[in-house]
Length: 313
Image 1 (cartoon, rainbow, N blue to C red):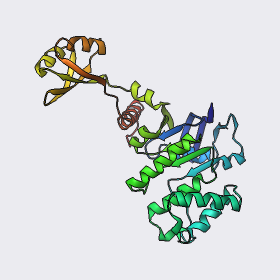
Image 2 (image 1 turned 90 degrees about the vertical axis):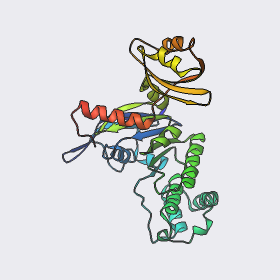
Image 3 (image 1 turned 45 degrees about the horizontal axis):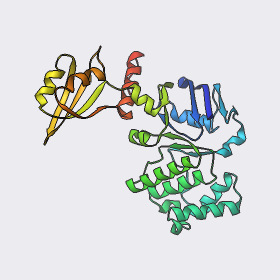
Image 4 (image 1 turned 60 degrees about the vertical axis):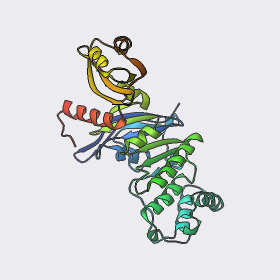
């Protein structure tokens, strides 16, 4: 079942069409990647889901029904542009924001004690936000985003400002939240994190949804018919078998093991390639080369822009 669905969302600002008939379905308990170039419309969609602004057309369903104003208490939002009050003390501000999310003072203090200990930041309670580094402030922002244990979390570039150790810390927390049943929308330009964390993705470009699906299926669908063959034997024997029917992209040899990358041509498949190679060399491994989300992102955006005569930005 889907926790969140958007149907035909349209949003226009003056002469700028920010979203054009955008629909997506976020399965309950999943990590859903919301991707796209700068200015594609991602932040506008996030703002609409958070009821910061409303759509000009379309509808949003939350938990199987039309979204209601009080659903905002079931959502946690970590924006890309952080909004902490620099002059306030960390503990005072965290307590204030937790109570805004609907927690009593007693519950807020109990949960903050847990998170301050978990992140090992007890000494920050009486520090002002302006005394913290960007990464330290990010930890506080993350903590107050999840403090009320919402059903839906929306993270917009959550790793911005973190060093590699704290990036891993936040990744681990996101995965733990998923294990507990939280549904997460994750917007980022870091495609490696998308591959590592996300179950599903939607790619928005020039205000439209141009690609959606399970991440493994998307990567398989955009496979380039290139296979890596690890083998033992004479590389020239492999070359002779590949010439003509297939395209040999590269071949490397280290000690007794060689690796070749071969692209299939039309009217051929993986079985045809194996049938040719098995008599000639000893096959050790044979695997398709699946494109990365980074490569797919670039390919899909460029193809869409070229097809519609749009500037590539």
